[in-house]
Amino acid sequence: MAGPHLGEGTRLAAEQNAWLVFEDEAGQTLRPPRARTWAPRGHTPVVRVSGKGSGRVSIAGLLAYRAGHRPHLYYRYAVHRGRRGERRSLSETDYAALLTAAHQQLKAPMILVWDNLNTHVSTRMRKFLDAHTDWLTVIRLPAYAAELNAVESVWAHLKRGIANNAVTDIDTLVALIKNRLRRMQYRPDLLDGFLGQTRLTLQPGQT
Image (cartoon, rainbow, N blue to C red; front, side):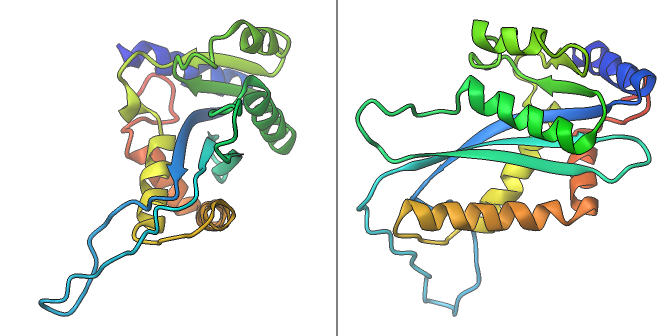
């Protein structure tokens, strides 16, 4: 199912000398991801979480690839502090700002690969996409095809990077997330590996 969709994306990217861009989103609360670690035999390490405080960080990530060029990772985040009436997810404005900022940095057309999240297909988002067809083309992933999105590997790597880190407030969590994402931005080999894990290729007609 996914082959024709992404095959068309790589073909368009080659024809337009465009960047193939994957997008996905994730969230993190103050409760840290759990992971295995080293400890003396018989002394199970304990990560204490107070349970106090609230909040959530929503993150949208973009991975940009073009044959013969260094890959790039861009991201945008929103902090939700649990206030009454506060939006609990990224908005169309957030996605539009992320895409626009990436385009300004890449200075080339973009073939955007993302899923059918309600915010991606809303009327407001469609208006933005339709207004920028001169540099932005959208390829939608089939349902239940998360393994074809390279950004999924970004989130897996991020979760490992912040695992077992107990933070006491949302601002410290934001700083930790930004630190881990910035480390990834300076590792093009790692970003290439995220694409490799999808078993996709930048060459048109090949998967």
